Image 1 (tube, one colour):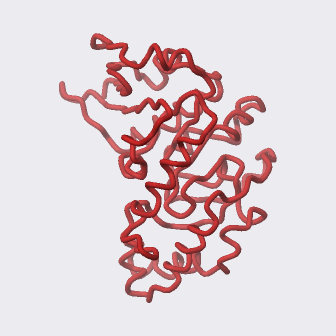
Image 2 (cartoon, helix red, strand yellow; image 1 turned 60 degrees about the horizontal axis):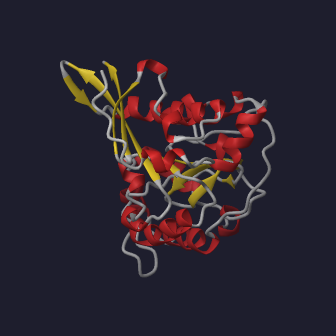
Length: 270
């Protein structure tokens, strides 16, 4: 049974609609599915920063790139090839795949964008924001090229000692400017840390998924990734517009366990 729910900001949230959904990327990236619909081509929002990151990566020698990407010697060449394009190709929206179809990790397998109906796809195109170490934000209809770069990667860019130092002020400002009633944070901890939440002015609900195993609640990475993608899909498919609408999520055996202030926990039996 759910814990007693503290309404907190829920009443405020429930007067709002048109949420923006924040989601982490995945390392895995694929090719454009032959049956994927056309979703347009939005511009890269932070072209100068993306170009600076590409330059910083390409200037590293092989040893430093191996450390940055945390890959084996056998994988290094293939990763280097990903980063061998001309800088302009990373910020040219005519290149690559739309964000909705570019990622292939656990969350995106469950999101399954190419099987969404036209109305849900339109909502996802406009309201899904994938937080990226390279691009800052990848919109659903923004074309990107394959890359490998985690937000927590130890890469200095200009005067910024790491990607968090670069992106945190920019992404916080970006989120505050969004014309959305509220934000749903479905990011992992790694990517949620790319925002200064104390300075975020748009109402935000943070979502966690946990498994009950041997009488204890546990966060299991793979299951959490899958659940984030599934909830994002469900939000767009069902056109969820309020915080109380979010509370009704019940796919894959999850049920709302607690809702205190701006934090929701969904739990399922392991």
